[in-house]
Amino acid sequence: MRVFNKASCIVKPSDCTWSGKLVLSELDQTGVTTHVPTIYFYNQTPEDWLTVLKSLKSSLACTLVHFYPLAGRLSLVDGGRLEIDCNASGAQFIEAYADIKLTDLDSLLPSPLYHQLIPSIDYQNVPLEEIPLLLLQVTRFICGGLCIGLNISHVAADGQSALHFVSEWARTCRGELLESTPYLDRKVLRAGDPPRTSSVVIEDEQFGPPPILIDQNGQNERHNETAVTMLKLTATQVEKLRNEANLSHKSEIIRGFTRYEAITAHIWRTSCKARNHKPEQPTALAISIDVRNKMRPPLPQKYFGNAIVNGIGTGCSGEIVSKPLGYVSSIIRGAIEKVDDEYVNSAIDFLKNQDDLSQFRELVPTSNDDEGPFYGNPNLGVISWLTLPIYGADFGWGKEIHMGPGTHESDGSSLILHDKDEDGSLVVALCLQVRHMQDFKKLFYQDVDTNDGIIN
Ligand code: COA
Image (cartoon, rainbow, N blue to C red; front, top):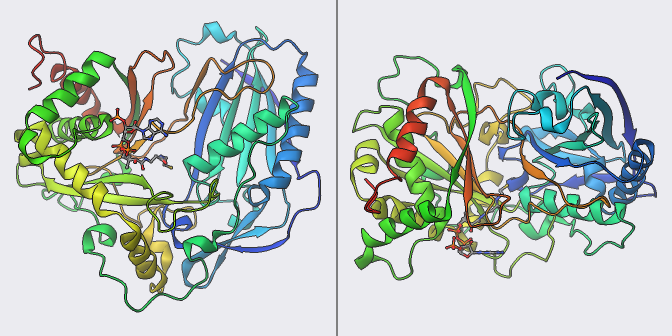
């Protein structure tokens, strides 16, 4: 595939917006602070290409009036802290043409081709203050189909907020009124407040460095080549996993395990096996937890920003591999349940007290990428998209034929999402080091597909 004739412009809000520095919550500035890529594919549109481009641009300009932080730029301030300068600098809009039909693509799933369809960001060479927080590319295929590749700054928006924006942009493009305005004041997550004195102590596991390989010999696992794969689990396989988790831990749980808990336990266990850890190898699992409804009072509806806190499950590879799936699921349940209002506020207080916040960024756009916590081998991060409204972005020419994550190249980073078929099957999008991938795939299915329904 060749993608050519790329033309780029900046789309600014179509009306005046508030200008000034938006003080960010500590949760916006820690964890993943790079852009997050997603992609939407559509069949042929009824309108001609120029009309499509015009409506996408004008509706984007209108939507940015309400979501104006996305039109701003980041600035780095004292203490490694970030702010959004709401200066209406705009979003980058690229239009491009591909010399193939959509049906010529082997699949619409993540592949190196995505690099040509989703705008990339050169964090090393472009000053932070000049990088748009929203970049997108609309690519037309020769069959008349198109795709929209988005890259949205995680400092500006978490998954819920990014999807809210896309949904309102699509609605505006269809000629409808906004359904709900974003709640932009991040002070509800105590942005700008001093730390409280009476906070509970957050253990090392939340903010201390995650485990490293015990036999690493100084070798840095961060720089090993990675690959991405999408692994489907049928509804039957999902229920097999859930049943196995519940059966093996019946006496100790009050409510049965969720699909997320059972599947994540399975992914964690499989990764320990595929990475061939020693039994005594410590391993940590990072769980992105949406805390909107965990806060007291809950955050306002449509809070726009980051309301995600990492829950951390820990164990030794030997126990993760050999103990029943229900045991591993219960570690995950424990890590999720621990994160309540008090825990979140304590995490915020801990971060407020830090002299340099940049050390708590997982993928650091502003400095050496050897810094920051690493959730690759021997660790893992599993994000759930199961409750996010990821499908159904209709810009006026019907719903997408495929929506999914862009390529992510960070070892150990994975996502669980619904399959588009809506038959109860799920997909695990996973990034691992190339040298572990083949074993992972084999073990992942070997342990699910047993004839008697018992998972090994
Ligand atoms: N719509 C449909 N189902 C919902 C739902 C919703 N809005 N909210 C919850 N549920 C269902 C879940 O699917 C789950 O059902 P299952 O047992 O059949 O799988 C059940 O209710 C419990 O859900 P939840 O309490 O969310 O637990 P979980 O184990 O599925 O997920 C977390 C745990 C921590 C992953 C989840 O609560 C969470 O915070 N997700 C974050 C999502 C997110 O924002 N991701 C993007 C990060 S940038």
